[in-house]
Length: 209
Ligand code: FES
Image 1 (tube, rainbow, N blue to C red):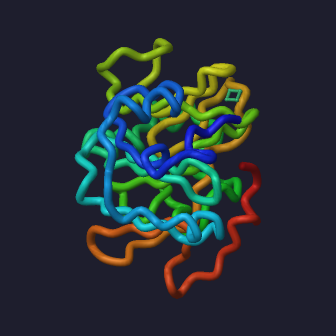
Image 2 (image 1 turned 45 degrees about the horizontal axis):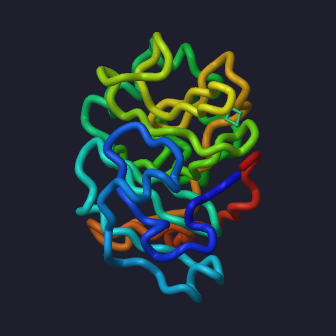
């Protein structure tokens, strides 16, 4: 797996995506950068929590931050996308629609796999062989495969996920995308890498990254 942020500068690891994302290294040069709330190098090296300002994210946009050397996808899901997450036609096509496998902390064990339905937080690593899935938030846009409502598509072997990171039936990836520890420290700031104050949950207990 190659992550453009590895060994790079601060510009490499934090950016916003509005459409399909190809290779991270290529995209990092082509999309707007967010230039605040980035942790310093010692925090990143220690794997400490990373704060992100959600007010920077418009509906349909995704930000990618790095936590413990992994890409973390943060998405502001539009109302239509939130509604789709409960569509029976979608649920029937998912391998683990109720998130029965321990791929998320208890506070994300719900239909939207997050603390607030508007915001998803996912580890951006395919559970098949570790490629970085591409972001397709718009079902009416150009999609790499037919009969799909968008979400995440892994170009390596064609695994598909919805916008909650739930994997589709009949693809190589065996599990939903992992949800990392996170919580809201204010109405607009989300902290990646730390559970809510009243929760004890070990990220290493996850079934598969
Ligand atoms: S690594 Fe994603 S489908 Fe194989």
